[in-house]
Each structure stands twice: as structure tokens, then as C-alpha cells.
Image 1 (cartoon, one colour):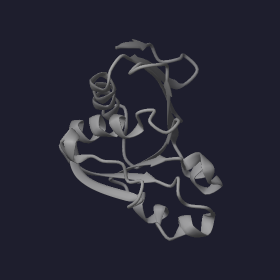
Image 2 (cartoon, helix red, strand yellow):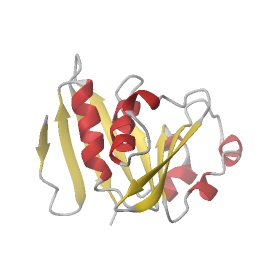
Image 3 (cartoon, helix red, strand yellow):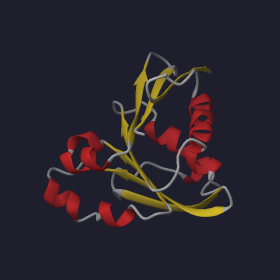
Length: 157
């Protein structure tokens, strides 16, 4: 696993992983960079490793073990409770791939999830203008063959 330094002009972090375990480790490291309230879009093709990355974030927040974190493809939303810097934190993991419009999205109540103690991670959030507008950053994962991944994290100021 390798990491590039943050870009001078903003908060951009880049990682290259060689295995699923590396991707989990990057998620663990990312948890320290995230501060509630925050909504991040998780971008990447099917199978890119978005849920694997969330496993690491959940572990670092003591919200769940890696094996307990699964894709919310059919349930749309998974909620975990953890701790960050000694304070309670809620981790919401959403997958909006199957939703077809803003009206369906509204039924999830994403605005209600974004409380002062919440980290909201939304797979396929780039499909919706309302999520793009509310997002405080994105995590973009690109599969590079085999288990190799390139992960770019962009956090708005």
C-alpha cells in the first residue's frame, strides 16, 4: 500500500492498494480524516471495493467488525454506532444504485441522517443532484486489475 501526500491546493489523498486487506487498512486510516457531520460520495464501478473500504472505516470507529459490514444494495441503508475521539459517532452506509429519481431518494431521509455526530457514506450518490450538493467530498475507487486499487479521497474545506 502506498500513499501520496495531500495536494497543496486542497485536501486530496491518494492511495494504491494491492489487496482487500490493504483497502480495509486505507479505510481505517481514512476514519481519522473524517469529522462529523460529513456526507461523502463513494464512487467506483461494481466490485471496485467501496464496501471493503467502509469495512475499514467501521472498524476504526469501533462501529463494527469487518465481517459485519455488508453492502446495503438491497436494504439501501446500514447504520452503525461507534466512537471517534471519545465521542459517539453514527456511521451510515447507503447504496442508492437501485433508486431511479429524487422522489425515491427523499424517502430515505438523507437530510435527517446528517446530524452533528454522523458520517454518511453514499455509494452511487453521484446519480443525484441533491447528494452532489450536500456532499462534503468523495472517495473514488478504481480497480486496476486483480486486487489492485487506486483510491482518491477529495475532502472539501
